Image 1 (spheres, rainbow, N blue to C red):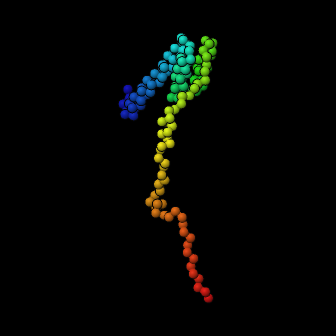
Image 2 (image 1 turned 180 degrees about the vertical axis):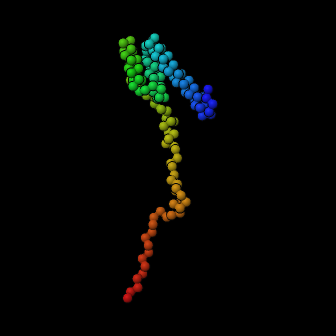
Image 3 (image 1 turned 180 degrees about the horizontal axis):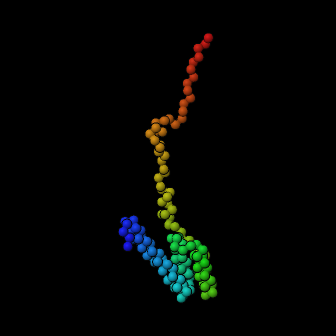
Amino acid sequence: MPIIKSAIKRMKQTAKRRERNVATKRDIKTATKAFMAKPSTSTLSAAQSEIDTAVKKGLIKKATASRRKAGLSKVAKEAGVKLTAATKKKAPAAAKAAPATKKPATKKPATKAAAAKPAVKKAPAKKATPKS
């Protein structure tokens, strides 16, 4: 058991992360088993989604996910499940309109000295030269 404060904190963080990772891996396994038991488009989609989530969280590597998804697709093809292209859901109009209503950023001078300076330097006035 750690005695140092930082080691105690690290131990707590590790326990939380491990719990989270184990739960995500369990989700992958249950979704895959559900697909293997009853191959269908919905169960295939759910299994692939769980695998993608694990990659996004850095739990499994991209190549591992690709290999697992290829295996699922192979089983689906043998089972006669129609593989359809993934369709993206359209975002609601309110979500698209939100960035458009955002206020434009105003430029602020970095320092007070920059604010006091005129924007354009004036040319020096010509001195009158006396005629000889």
